[in-house]
Each structure stands twice: as structure tokens, then as C-alpha cells.
Image (cartoon, rainbow, N blue to C red; front, side, top):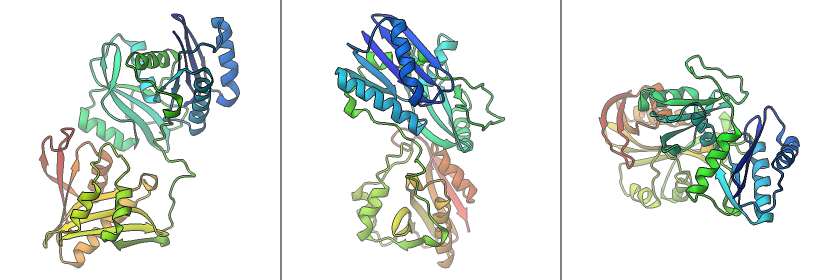
Length: 372
């Protein structure tokens, strides 16, 4: 079997090659992928006394990481697969980093939390379980503010995890993050790709896509304060609401078109949409219980988040409540949705109850209340 694997998502370049059972590796530290990838690959092929002919698989790290690096690695991998007719194996950088755990110990009894510094006080992270010298993902890859991430780990796992952390040349440092930074290795890349092949988790090059958890600056929806308006939503806005509900957020249960349509049949249902230049960026919906408001949904487009729009929607609900002499605002939230929990606590909500194993993945529902 002949397997070539590439990682260009971080500050360095890692390449692994398996040629008839023999393993070959190259690891360049700080490198410019567009200039170093092919010379490094050429030297590795010479060392292995082979060529890229007769490749069976090409493994490639699809992100998260450098936008440019991801594109370079995918372009090369897809080209090789197209020209040589081999299968493509896409792996993410968090699982590759997590395999470093086996470089340090034979097994891990705790969940493994892979963390990559994403800059701007944010991290990429994913949780795994170790089983039979393999890692099994038990969460989706996530991008989060560091304080939200650390709160999530503390509340959900009581800090009982094995961390694997890569600073990725970012300047941020966190006093309460006690593990030392480590780099990607071609050995971990190789092991990760081989396990995917063993599990038949490979595809044609056309179906391998980049994993972008962060919105690029070009894609980010930036708004001006004087362009923001919040308007009453109606059944005529159903397509707009459905678009915002179709973001595939792993810790948020999206509402279907049918559920949204049925909500408008309830006379106590109210919905407000936040727009900038006629573009809907988020919405909030409630049930008016006469003396209380219960928030049903608060949604912000992914590429408009971290700009205070959730706070704007909540403050608008508070204003509407006060105008109608409503004293209490209620809501429930998934206890794994730590960014939302953090926001609600910041906005003055307090926990008043809990529904155990309430959601489909058996997470608990936290009941919260704000007194106006």
C-alpha cells in the first residue's frame, strides 16, 4: 500500500509517506507552504526511493487552520488524486493533534481534548475518547472564545480531560492553561490517516471539502450601528427565518419550517428580526404569557456573531417586556451551549431549574429567569 499524507494548516509543513510497509516522514518547522511543500515532498520521495506513481491514498488535513494553508494542501491532494486515480482521505487538524497523545503514552483513560490557538482570544477544540489505540470523536470541531471553552470544559467534564494543545505561533497565553504547547507531527498525521483508511472513511477527491470554522474577513458580515433595525416578523418572513435556522449548529436544535409556520398560528407568539441594510442577521421569538415572556429562539448568523447582536436582541426583548408591564423573562438552554449560557448570565439571567437529559443527545436543559 502506498499512502501520501499532507498537513499545511499550521505554521509548519508535515508530510508522511508509506511505501510498501516502510514509513517516511518530513517535518519543517516555520515554513511558507507555497514555497516549501514541493521541495520537501521531492526530498522525501528521493529518501524513500520512489515516486508519486501508483498511490493508493492521499491524506490531507482539511482544517481548521490557516485559510491559505488549507487551500494549498487541498489543491495538491485533489490534483494528485485526480491525476493518479487514487482515493482521498480528509482529516481535521484537531484529530491529527490529538494523536500526539499516543506519542506520550500507550493509552489514555480520560477524554482527550485537542486545542489549537485560533488567535483573537479564541480556540479551536474537539473532544475524543481513546479506544484500542484509536481516537473516537465525541464532539464536533468547534471555534469558541477561550473563556467559553474553559467554562464548558469545567462544567461538562469537571476538568477531567487530557489536553493536547498547540499554540500555533499565536501570541496569546492563558495563565490557567497549564499544558505546554506541542506541534503537529508527521507521525500523528500518518496514524490518523491510516486509521481512517482502516475504517473505510475515504472518498473521491470531488467530495473532500475544506473545514472552515472561522469566517474569513472577506465573508464576515460587518454592520454599522446606524444601519441596524429590529422589525416585527410575520409569516411572510418564513423563508428568511428558515435560512437562519439552517446553519447546522451542533449544540443548538434548529427549528423546521413546519415548526416555524405553526408558531405563527399561536396568537401569543411574537417574533422580531434584526436587519442591517435589509439583510437579516438574527432573530428572537417569544411566547407572551401576559405577565411573563418566554424566549423560544434567539439566533444569529454565524458570520455575524461575536459582534454583540445577541445582546441587542435580548435588550430589545427587555424593552418590549417593560413597555407591556411584563416583569419576568424566562428561557431554557442546553447545558452544553456554554457561549449561550455565558451570554445569558452576563445579561442577568439566573438559573431556576434543570431538566435532566432533556435533549436528543441526553444533555440537560437549564431553566433561567431574569427579573426586570
